[in-house]
Image (cartoon, rainbow, N blue to C red; front, side, top):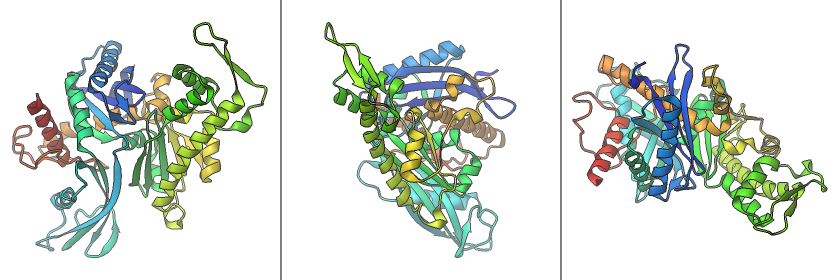
Amino acid sequence: MEQKNYSVGLDIGTTKIVAIIGTENEYGKIEVLGIGRSRSLGVHRGVVNNITQTIQSIQQAVDQAVENSGIKIDSVTVGIAGQHIRSLQHSDYITRPNPEEVIGEEDLEKLCNQVYKLVMLPGEEIIHVLPQEHKVDGQAEIKQPIGMYGGRLEANFHVVVGQVSSIKNIGRCIKSAGLDLDNITLEPLASANAVLSQEEKEAGVALIDIGGGTTDLAIFKDGIIRHTAVIPFGGNVITEDIKEGCSIIEKQAELLKLKFGSAWPGENKDNEIVSIPGLRGREPKEITLKNLSKIIHARVVEIIEQVYLEIKNYGHEEQKKKLIAGIVLTGGGSQLKHLKQLVEYITGMDTRIGYPNEHLAGDSDQEIASPTYATAVGLLMNSVETKYRNDKRKETEEPLKGDEEMVLEEVTGSGNDASALGAERKSVLDRWADKLKEFLDNAE
């Protein structure tokens, strides 16, 4: 198989960095060929705060993936999250010069590009502009207006915004690790692609991805992304609480959480005790599992309530916006014992744990099908799709769009880039990626 047919997803998390190499098999499933994982040392709450350590962690994960697969990695699709991410709803319209002509791709692109001109706060940049319903001459609830006649084209957009510096820092880490950047996508969207079915997206569902540093939320209804949010708390704050509450070191606190942790204090009896070895000649500590679960419960309730507030802000209580498919939990933090029951108790919504195995080939390693790897698998799927679209574009010399328009704006400037694809009409994503590469090259 040719080198170019391989795709790579790179998940730069707060606790771990995962590089996953794969390809699409003849049945349309993702075949994982190699995976590398390293401890993330330079990331805090989803944001790079130590470039050198992050580069080393990326290289370690990539080297491991290369060793496992025997395939050399050149470029990656990377996820972006962190507490600097926010989202907003925006409506916009264009007036078409000739209503007698049918609406085409260029009209949608013109409307989309107009949204990118919105004035953001200083240092912020629009990352994604995700179209929702369209209106043509006042006719509402049109999902696909191409081919229709009309003079006024309107649309509602879900706009995702992030800090320019954070995006550039990720780009710098990728380049310094000797890799090219294929694509950047919002991590909750990648996780959603990996664990949600189309039926769930149609019925209405809230995806909660509990990571080490952040908890990401993505809400879908009628097959369309409706709301995204990043809450700056994750599994790490639970570990920190255990460390403080039990007066033990972080490594022991993490092990306690994984082996004996529960989100439901009523499950443990008062006489259930675990002994922790003391530090250098000191007596071992005895911790009751009931106390441990009380510490975990308090923090988990706080995280879930913040997420539920975001879901209620979307308007879940209204019958029109009801999320019939309930909640899907994924990410490493979703594996905490009795978390599903606690989420159902607090929100009153049906809940399940999301595994990315639906899109993986049947002979895939069981470890990869864990919720821990949901974002990495989603990024790999995004990379496979982007590569497929690019190959199609080269064949037809026409840019193709995916089911979801995950477009990225230019980080700096707005000039034309004539180099990469010659005279071809470029999508916003291509221009953004080119501008980021140009910025990184000039920074050297």
